[in-house]
Amino acid sequence: MRLVLVGPPGAGKGTQAQFLAAHFSIPHISTGDIFRANLKAGTDLGNQAKSYMDRGELVPDSVTNEMVRDRLTHDDVANGFLLDGFPRNVAQAEVLRAILADKKTPLHAVLEFSLANEEIIARLSARRTCRDCGAPSVGVDKCPTCGGEVYQREDDKAEVIARRLEVYAEQTAPIISFYRNEGLLISVSAAGNVEDITASAISALSRVAQ
Image (cartoon, rainbow, N blue to C red; front, side, top):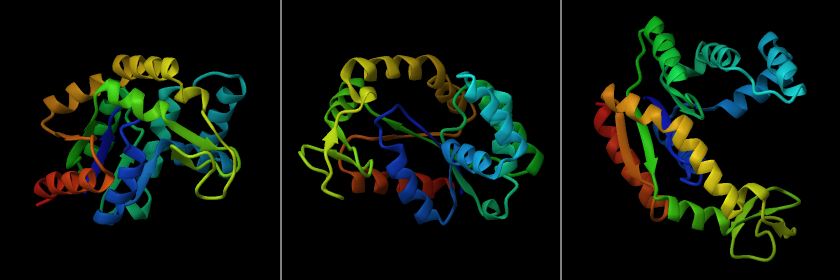
């Protein structure tokens, strides 16, 4: 199974990615993990990224694309992968298509987790984060994991969430149309409990993996 996950902030992609990667026995590859691995290892690509980050600039697509290209040469992707956080725009989607065409290993599907903006704002603005261990929680005064103090992150405030959704609509949502035109898009509702969403996703993906 070669899979890309897309969806707005608050749709639960990170949680679902873990379950889906385990179910299909494929590595969960997030751009954040790729960046951290390259920075920690001091690779040429990691040093290039660091030079931009140290100046407070966005890492250009060209560097991110090469990090993903390199990651997809590792042995653990022989039986598939789940990409989370890449591609973020149509240009990156086209690069990914070219990378996989070279390897003759096209995507099986692009799974979109859809959720109404009102639900996203309600979900994220209710979230609290532990100051000590960083675990998220909802509706508690103390962290259920370590007992630490919980607080509301700046990017979980309603006005910030609304802006994050605007950025998503502007930059990332167009790849949904791109993949729909490619015949790869599968949309699953991200409303409801985690187990039901996972079951719906697995059912939909199992049909394309035959």
